[in-house]
Length: 208
Image (cartoon, rainbow, N blue to C red; front, side):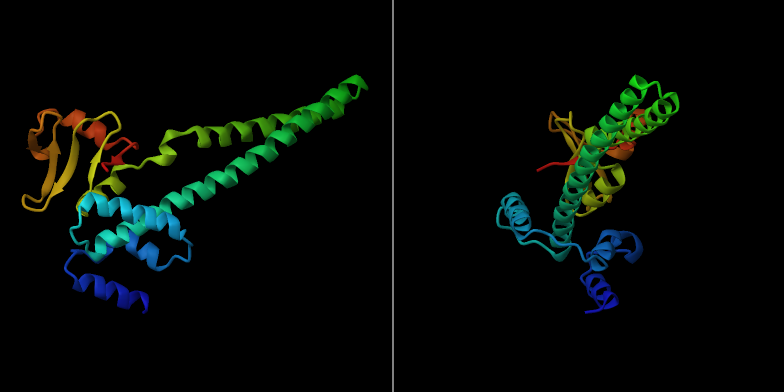
C-alpha cells in the first residue's frame, strides 16, 4: 500500500478526526524503515492486553503501541552511541592531558598550551555527553506527546502523583482523577497557574 492509501484507510475507520494533527506519529511510522525487535513488540502487546483484560483493541491503539516500542528502542540505540562516544572522548582527554604533562617536563611551553587546549575541549564535550546521559528527561515526555496518548485512551500523570489525567470522549475535555477518587473537569480548576505549571513539565508518564 502507498502512504496515501494507508492514510485513507485510517481516516475511514472514524478514529481520526483530523489527518494533519491526529496522524502525526502514524505518518512518521509510514515513512520509517526502523527495525523493532519482535520480543520487545511481543512484551509490549502482552502488557497492554493485560490492561485491556481481553477487550478488543482498535487499529489506533495498535499503532500507538508499535510506535512506543520503536521510541524506546531508538532511545536505547542513541544512548549506546553516546556511551561509546563518551568512552572515546575520555581516552582523548586523558591522552591530551598526558601529552601536555610531558611537554611541561621538557620545557616545551607551546606544546603544553596546545595539548592543554585540546584536553579542555575534550572536557567540554565530555560534560555535554554526561549531561545528556544523566538527564531524566531522556526517558520521559512532554505534554504534547502525553496529550496525544490521552486522546487515544491512555491515562497520564506526573511521577509524584497518586491521581492521573485522562481524556473524556463524553465531555470532550481532560478529566482530573484525584487521589481521593474525586474527578473534575480541567476547565473547572481553581488554580490555573498550578495546572499550567504541570502542563509545561517534561516528565509525564503513562499510567500502566
